[in-house]
Length: 203
Image (tube, rainbow, N blue to C red; front, side, top):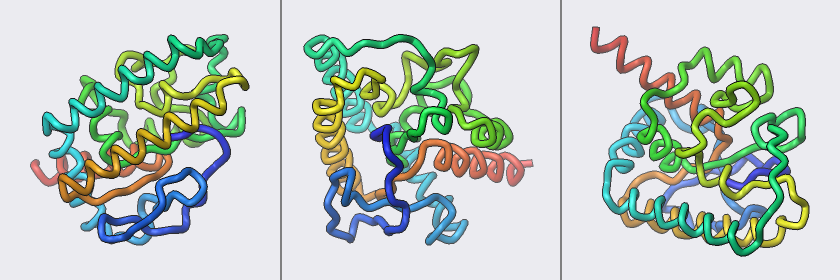
C-alpha cells in the first residue's frame, strides 16, 4: 500500500503465519512465486468473491473517508506532476494486498488486460495513467490516496497506511482468505491472467 522505497519481496504470507504488519518487517510475497498457478488462481477468486462482501466495502469506504480527513488536516501539496504514477522514473513503487486489488477492480467498468499491464511495467508507470493523469481517480487504491510528493507528509502518511494495513489484515483473518501483499502491477497482471484463463475456458 505504501509508495516509497521498494519493500523486500522474499517472505511468504498466509493467515496461519503471525507476522508483523509494519512496512519494514511486513511479510510480502511476489505474485507468481511460492504458489502454484492453481493456488494463486484460487486466491484471486477468493479475493474477488470477498470484494463483494458488504464488510469489505464498508471498511474500504471507511478508510477512504479517513484519508479525506487526514488530507483536510495536513493539507499536503499536490503539484499534479504525475510523479505518483511514474514509478520507476521517480524511484518508488506501490504495494497493496490482493483484497485491495480485487476491491479496486470491482469498482471499475473494466480491468486492464495482461498486455496493458506488461506495457506499463515496460514503461515504468501505472496502467491506469492516461495523458499524465490518473484514469481511475475516484476509484484509485488507498495507497494512491496516501501518497504525496510533499516531503512534509512522510510522517503521518506512514502512520496512516500502517493503521490501514493492520485493519485490512484483520479482515482477511475474519473472512478466512489468504493474505498477500505485493506490488500493484504484479498483482494486476496476475488478476488479468486469471481472468483471461477463465474467458478462454468458457469458450
